[in-house]
Image 1 (cartoon, rainbow, N blue to C red):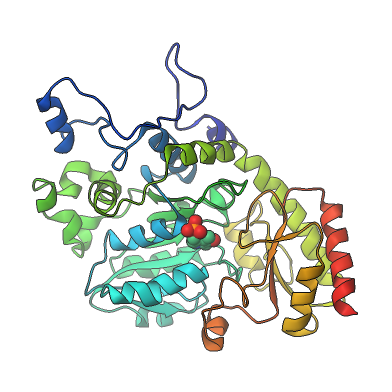
Image 2: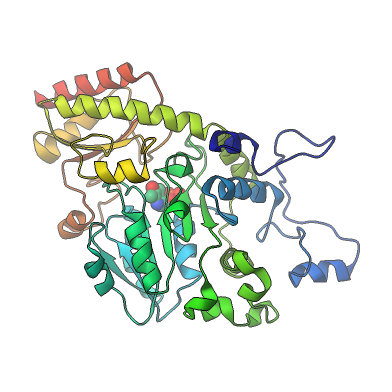
Length: 424
Ligand SMILES: *Cc1c(COP(=O)(O)O)cnc(C)c1O
């Protein structure tokens, strides 16, 4: 099946007489006839549902759809994108461990990795996303367990050279984890370029309607944990699960099974089945919406680029953009609907522009059907120092503009009148 069909059909196939639409299993628990049967489930000897923290049919169907869209073997939903990013690292990197991360990532991720994971004894080295192979190599240590980056960084809109980062990660026998939130699997499937694990904040385009915070971790099944020798948590018996060795028992699904059976069991950041249901509705139209987001954003970016009241525009769909060549390679059908630009007059003009918009709403959110706008220096990134802002590619005049799927002329007219107000 092609990806547009998968958006609609994957994950749930009703049997004769079953509901056509994925049902919401709003139940914490499942009933069994015997103690023995239930025991086998706890030992992971039989598959079946018993408690929603570990598995729920609604959540599983939606995870299976996302795994199919990404071309992975399996996926697990989480209650938020933050939880997905945390779990993806914590599943393979514990106290005393270290990982390498692109310095151009979502502000929440940057803070979690740089501050909160440090408190847990996990160290990170941030590396410029445009770093050469030598510079990337220099960031590795004996205890490095993973490499992390974003396909299209939020909000800096840097396109990562996934193939290069995967090559370096693999040379050091560790997996590459890619946050594919902004591109979505419609526009880029990082596994096709060598990434091993994909994470999402499904809160953004996947949900697409700003109804539900959520996340997802997808396993490609391609990383050879045994050959690496760096991941005893996957390749030696887990005493907390009756001595199961994940790689032996689950093969290509070792990482995702450990993530579910151990990390989710113990930390519990599951989505509600109702939220998973809403996410599934969003996924059904993802391919259609991404097409419109991208064509609208391209027109808005071209308008901004020509406008003398705008000092700079970043959108990898523009030929003038630093990342246009990488976008042609990794995002040939379009990137995303998010544009960043600077209003002439710096921070003050940027705030005036924001406050003058009528259609575009000031919200913390990005990447949903409605056009929305944010000033990262005063919102998402406000806890970062100026130096950290610089490293994250966020300047004080940066406006993050998330182009929705409304009529594009209405969006451009709104920007035009707000630029007029800001230039007065
Ligand atoms: C929003 C976002 C996150 C965090 O996701 P939440 O769902 O808000 O917890 C992580 N990565 C990227 C790229 C994001 O845009």
